[in-house]
Amino acid sequence: MTTDIIARCRSIAAAHAHLDGPLLPVLHAVQDQIGHVPMAAYPALAEELGLSTAEIHGVVSFYPDFRTEPGGRRVLRVCRAEACQAMGAAALGDDLKARLGVEWHGTTEDGAVTLEPAYCLGLCACAPAALVDDRPVGRVTADGLERLAREGSA
Image 1 (cartoon, rainbow, N blue to C red):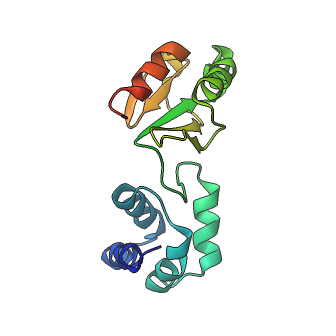
Image 2 (cartoon, helix red, strand yellow; image 1 turned 180 degrees about the horizontal axis):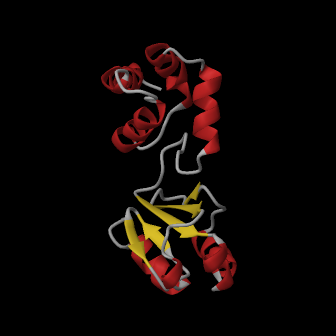
């Protein structure tokens, strides 16, 4: 962990400290700007926000959208909520894990793709659904998702 990243996290926290309940906006900003919420930055974030490191860890670990390690160049989130499960999302996830050679929250060895579960993307009418980076896609197949995930990730 470089001191630069911790300084950036500290700066982000300071910029949001005036908000009521700034922790979630700070964590989103850190992940948007750095790509993840590094555990080494928890003490700096806690100090800037007047919280404990346990509170920071509790929120980061509760929400599956936050990651503590850098993701791949492309992040693939597969919906695993009820409507998507009814339309084959469990088998889709298993197929993608096998194709990419990773488990959930894993990144391919070449750093190209990170596979993450999502718990309702609000695309139930288009199940099974996924996000490729921040782009929603519906009625997905493993072939289509693998192709989308690998496009632009080289």
